[in-house]
Length: 251
Image (cartoon, rainbow, N blue to C red; front, side, top):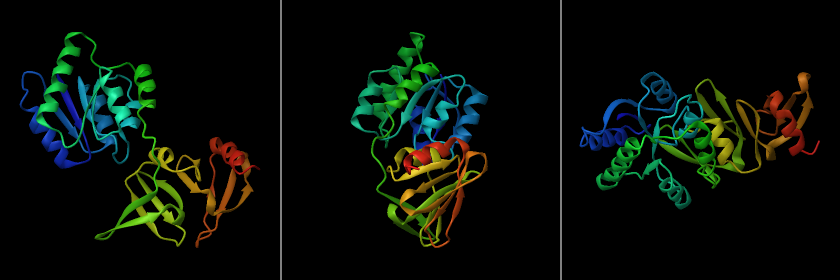
């Protein structure tokens, strides 16, 4: 089987590649990707039989990567997950590896992949996988956010966050005090993990509704959202998100 490894942790990639080298008759590593976006391009180009896939990654997380694939290889997640997800993985022809990966556990994965390949049942189609992934999304929400600031790691309270905004490949968090920090989350991942007070108002922006000062009707069914932060930030809603924002604010 040709395998592609996708993980944003270099040490995890090296360890997995080293462990897989013990199975030359079963697996040949054809590539390694350091983030979801790179991984997506490599899956499309190399068409591997199996991908060993991390979930929390910059640019695209594992779920977002899989959702964009036209042809689905066999998938082995390499991540820590809750017990419900672990049980779900065990019941399907898709596996998981708990980090740090242990040699004995990897041996079971290789045996499973070998068996499913022999049965010509390796992987899932897009419809089956999409339904399956809905049950695996983390249920817990963020309670705070850690960001890097020079040599320090700051722990931001969600109440101090004004909004999140994506710019090209990066997502920034803006605080009420006017500070800006780079995050490792995608907008889609934040939308899933943040509590209900945070609302996505456009493809590139999520606002903390507790800091909304006013909304002004804009052309094309859009709104301008002014916040109470120090910068009095004014954000434009996307057409597809205006209705949801109006409903939430009971306009």
